[in-house]
Length: 297
Image (tube, rainbow, N blue to C red; front, side, top):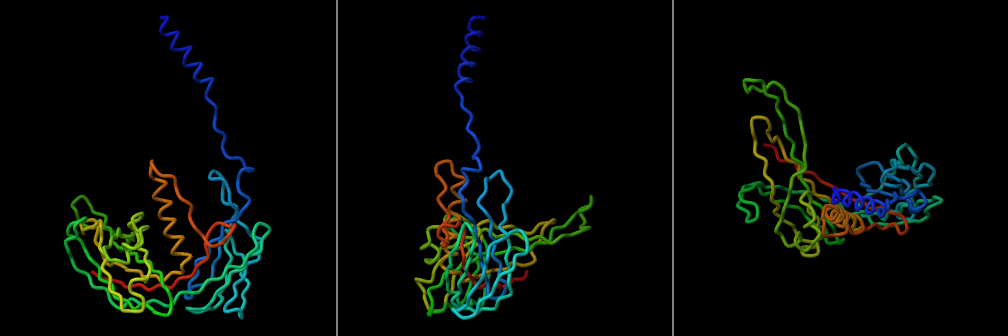
């Protein structure tokens, strides 16, 4: 009995020594804003702006900023606020234009300039099966495209699998179906992929520069690292291969974001900071061009 009472007393002493860790108060939140602007010449302009908030708070959208774009120091467009922190415009611009984003707000005032990447075109995609040392027998994609020697280019490749999923009755007969899409898990052993060490942090895309093949015809092979075969309940109808020519700001942002997300799940590493090009604001401003090649089965 004495041992039991000693245990109770020790427990009470330990509990009295524990200090609660308070949640971050509003005063501890940085007085800063987050801006994301990924623009494409083939789409309407969209800029998203919000205030930095606690992780346990709702988004604080900013609706009173003055946002505009300027093209080649000549044409200017004012963006209109819609909702959810989104500012939009149908402003027209072209590949290789110089583009300037201006944001004027009490928490941030700056003008950021980028060059819109050149247009990209996938010429052909061949598919075949091959034995990959780290994966086994898998599907390989051989992608052909032409790189422009005029610019230093940065690229992103990813794939979308389009599936038809079936509902079976008790007899195993298909009675209904739905369309479903998913990102493909990708890998690659080509030098441009290996030159970018950040590709080790994700299997959902490959990001690389043209420093090893600038201005010549490019041919790269990528492969699936997790092959999903057809079954009675799921059939692959097509695979869409996407190739994007991205500005350097997006290239750096995606690389550091992938590392940050991977490190969040690691028990041995602290997440590194995601890099942007906005100075005292968080986020990134960049442009990209894209092309899609569909492989039907």
